[in-house]
Length: 118
Image (tube, rainbow, N blue to C red; front, side, top):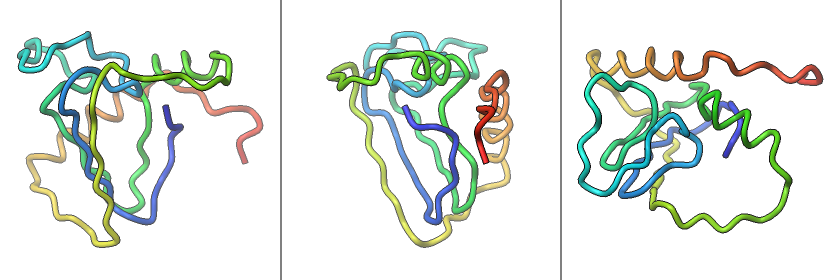
C-alpha cells in the first residue's frame, strides 16, 4: 500500500467489492455485506473517501507495519475492486462529513515516522 503522503490534486476513491489492502482493519466483507455496527476502522464495499488537495492520507497502522516488513516482490492482488478519480479542482465537503477526518486520524495512530525521513 502507499505511504502517508499529500497530493497537489484532489482524490476521490471507492471500493466496489472485496477488501482494500491499505486498510487492513476492515474485516473480510462480501459484496453487499452490511458494515458491522460500532466499527469505524477499515474500508468497506460501497464506501468511499475524499482527500482534498494537500490533505495527508495513507494506510492504517496495521497495513503500514505489514507492508513495511514484507519482501519487495510483485504480488497479484485479486481480493477486491476499487476506483479512483483525481482532479486539479478542490471539492467541497459538507460539514457533517468532516467527522470522517477524525476517524482517519484515529486509524493512523501507531504509525511511526521512519528515522531517515527528511
